[in-house]
Image (cartoon, rainbow, N blue to C red; front, side, top):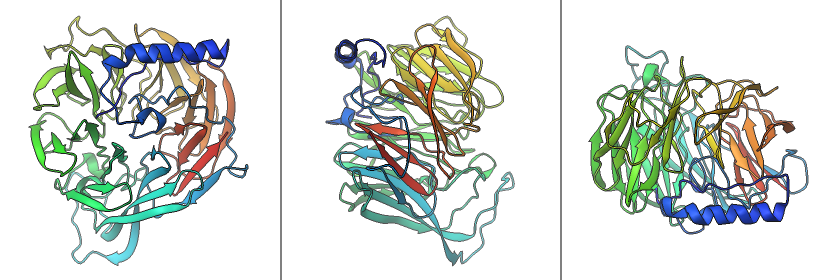
Length: 455
């Protein structure tokens, strides 16, 4: 994705802070060679869905607050049009969000749902909106309606029509509204190109979340659906398709590719209900594959050292640590470094901080922490009081772990044993987007509102 995937740093709140910070930067420097080349200043921003290192961790210098009071001086909130579940991204002084706003304009011809669908199409036009807000004040810089269209499917009651997160390389903004299209904007809001990949049929009509991933000058798009699944690479400057690889065994998955480097080549690791697979970004060739995931493989893969860690957790649990330099089908072989079949997430993605792998079970509030090198548990079955159901992925920042529940409670834990809770805050609204930290700011996004909290 033209992005770093792993800076394995140690960043703690206890002990000698100066020595710890020095250690952090030394380790980051030593391990940088293993990561895909990021956009300039990526570590000072949050330029993609899982952050600057594709693993849910903020840059080492990020020190967001742990107490989240919307009325405190310096904090702001912005009412967004419509609704959305996508995680914001931050580039320099802009915060980008996506929304879908229902209009009062009915469809000219009613849309008939697929026989397998458990949801009904809305039969109303929606506006699919991109918003740029000023990072310091929350004022709108620009706002564009990418398209007005009648969705061809319904959605799950806990879902929205704007669930994919945008991404940027610092030159252009890349936006996906899935079946509504892919859109590329300048950072000042001018449309550069758009592409219609067709209509996606999702499992039971539950909805879409096609988040694109940048790999240098290519945009990688995973399109897992109930039929016609594929992964493709587009030129980031024009939207021209470079290659496409069919994924006939894969069904709806909602996960985002991990872009990283291994042995001198850039690869895209993609989770899947049939198999997790690694593709060559250069030509789309499958390099390795590993079965064993659950149905509805939503969590995005992440990298630890020379391993790709893939998880899923719908109706059962699975997690595997797969060497990035694998080849062929390694399902059930001793090439798998470790596996852990308990408490894995259904909707959220895991988060990595140093060697600690954080995740919540299914869509609940039970926290597990593993040693990412061995798969051994450091913490199991810790209930996070007040969080309730959880779709958002954990955030690691400033020596803390932030976990936000769907009903608006955010708990903050120590990013070290015994992982004690140090703060808890509550906001009104539905929260499915993951927390974002840049510098001294923390961003939270409900379906309707973007919040900024500053230290």
